[in-house]
Image (cartoon, rainbow, N blue to C red; front, top):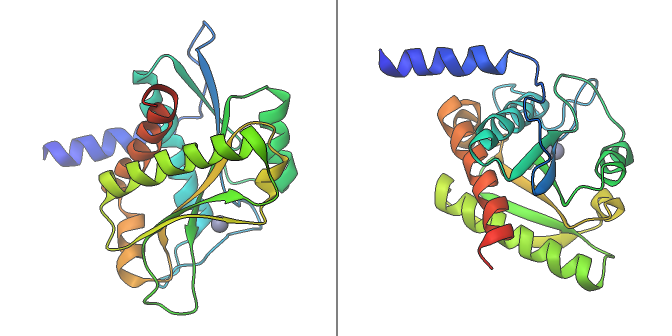
Length: 211
Ligand SMILES: [Zn+2]
């Protein structure tokens, strides 16, 4: 019963549009991007769940949970099911002069056995931006492995990504494979989404404070 009430409360809170309740500027501003949206559903799960919905849910929970860390302000690139161009997403971070940019995704693969959690940084970035993005990605990946305990740690990798347009350190997390039936079930569960959100928040906190 307690669990049911908790779940209902979380659903209720998530259905409220996100508003900025904080008056003072926090020490750090972090942009959290829920991947895809609108006509772009992203990955489609084994049982038909949409990546765009799951990652939006996790992004909203990250923001809600961040209220317990007043030194870190979280802003979302989208709070509902709308589509934003890729560079439009990093533009939001650049215009606000954010300290970090983190994009949330769920994976897909032709092989339904593909599984696990991974974090990406952009190729073709260099110097301090690359070093800091790598440190951020390592902090996020370590935290996700600790909190979410996937069967497979796929590590931190780099590829050509629009994230290179972000002027600040950036990373992209893949929370699991929607094309894997077991992982799709996990990703669809509120309990797992809460753990994912807490992992992302803790990873960000560790990047800022534990180095
Ligand atoms: Zn995606």
